[in-house]
Length: 169
Image (cartoon, rainbow, N blue to C red; front, side):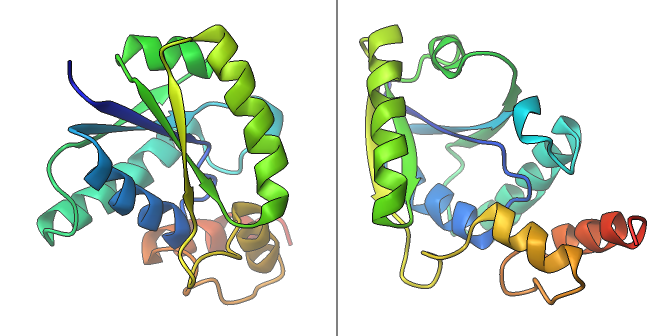
């Protein structure tokens, strides 16, 4: 049986914290699927296609720099996470924890996911020391008010954020 892991998220925007999780998670499995969720309830700034493209571009950079193996693929999805996990034949769900406050929500989600898909195990990775405070909503807030987000997101994403928030002023 292939050891396929799924790292899902909205990735709105993709941050260096996400890329750190992807890099580390890719070492735990024979294949890692990065699932870019539609998630209209979060009112994403970027379209599903834009977010998927940003993730693909950054993963391809990591692959070309030999920072991650070729075992990582990006797929967009809509609907229930557990249905998507079945679709990609994932046996492991990777979730990141930045702080203790993340744990309660993630524990609830892991329990619900287990009930919906008994063969799916959730594995928690703690955020690295440099990234533990980075959250997409924080990055969007800083960008909204013209702050420098270059230490949080790759350049192409920073440009995308700047473009979006220039039009809202």
